[in-house]
Length: 426
Image (tube, rainbow, N blue to C red; front, top):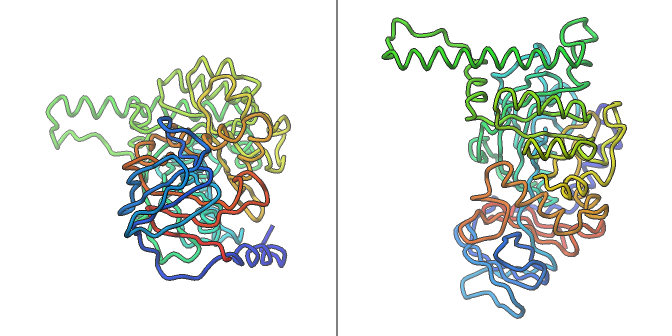
């Protein structure tokens, strides 16, 4: 679907609440809350409290009623206050709002193996959707390549910017520019290459392509280790291969892997490959995770659950259920939520709406908040900086005018690194 009058109206409506302002600057802020959800395990959740921010970091979190801002702090107040939300797997920023070739950079679908492409080289912080998600409280994204190639390339973790933020470079918002290698199973690779009678045309060939590349990476790594062990003679330098060099970090456990898989059998294949090569990995999308919880739990692998409100555009999502998150959580599997990719405008699911559906279908308010804050941060390995409001962490904070999971509630103020990136119009 190309840009339409309807989508133009969507963009206009989306920006009505934006307050025009100059470049945001971090300052000392005291945020009082009627209901503070710090998501820090050492403090109670849901009661009144105060969050102090200094120089872009959380200075202190205090629980209790009638707490006032110290002198020298800008005072803010909200009904509900939470950490900044984390989307664990999305193409926002590389799959743009206009849905035309000019802003679609999520899939380099010219070769089944594009291990050496990096999402940071496609990321556009000026894209409308990249800034739009910030207005819903999303302050951190793991941006990943799309689902077309068996080996899609390298994802990265980035902060968001607000609707009126100054021009921003990728380096300025980068937390971890190389966060994971993305592998895709299921129908995406089959659709891409099967129509051209090119491999992979089947699931088994998709898995073979991945295995073959990982085996080559093991051999490549062994050659370089032997060369270093033998003294590193420059005249005997092994041939450099950019794809294998990145995959060598995957098989060495230095770079995590993401296996994008929807059906239970594809999830099982991902676990099988991950186990065979002793990878550090996670499962993404996982529409049928609830059907295979015993296998996932035994493998000890975390799951990034895809959006349940996404249109069923493929057969592999036919068994989607709103209870997926609750069932996976009940099984004791580490889990977080993600928005992934959609081929039609507005292109990006709204993370907090997806969390609301999970909350209403068995996960509950705190469980849903964990899935888009501290649990997400732990799975991505950034919980030392993000995911909860605790002293020393980045001051990524969202102020809501009501229960975050009520449709009539809004993010009234969003801070990233202590700077206001979004302020809803009064």
